[in-house]
Length: 290
DNA sequence: TAGATTTGACCCCG
DNA sequence: CGGGGTCAAATCTA
Image 1 (cartoon, rainbow, N blue to C red):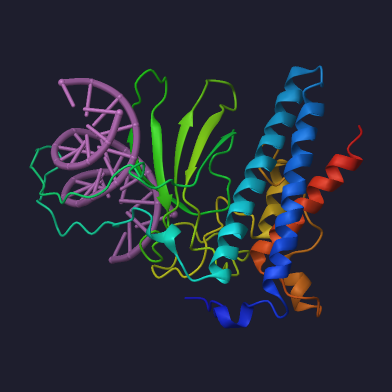
Image 2 (image 1 turned 135 degrees about the horizontal axis):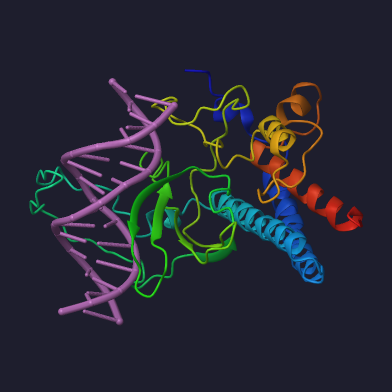
């Protein structure tokens, strides 16, 4: 497999926590701006344009929320070693090989009792977001279930972090379609923060790793969700002028370009992307008059 | 061939 | 007891 950069090489040189706090602050400002932007957008008289713009704002909010959550949990990791988030009700697929069941035949599988539904005692970090692009939140998710929900027109889809096994990342999300609009709206419920984010993306802009990639993935998969590959985002933008995607603006340089050719203080790719988002947001907010 | 998805059974909680 | 969440074998797909 392609070489992954070891974590040790990537650690920020100076004061990571200061940088992180600064980014968190910026993201929070960004969230406020997104909200005021949303109010402005709602005044757009043309339905089509308004919906598209609202979708963009919604995606920005999603991006900011997930970015914030990443950074905040990262900060917790740096500040103390208690990884309670990771242990939150995660007995993790430890069902010792249960009974065998043919797809068409019902065979009772032995199951161990375990805590379910995290509502037992402790409070799980839960966020709800409405978006048209539930997949675009920069993380790699693996679907593990789908369920018809009472009084709901659409089934609820269950995803867990694609690294839940390897890194015991407890993050999960439920996605439920809300309506039949052209780009339908989805309600995304995020449960638990990612704890796998301390790892870094591969040089993903060379090719889409997609599924048949390395079996021993050590990095975030930013393929579909993919903020991380700014080059890929650029390509995407050029090809289809993504409106509903979360990458509404494109940085003029990529992470690799920036840091391979300069001695700027090194941000992690995640932090780099957040900075790009904030800049994009601010640029749009102040300059998008047309 | 390995990773991702599908899907019905299983399990817990209200 | 029913609804919601999860498991895991079967199946799909790249």
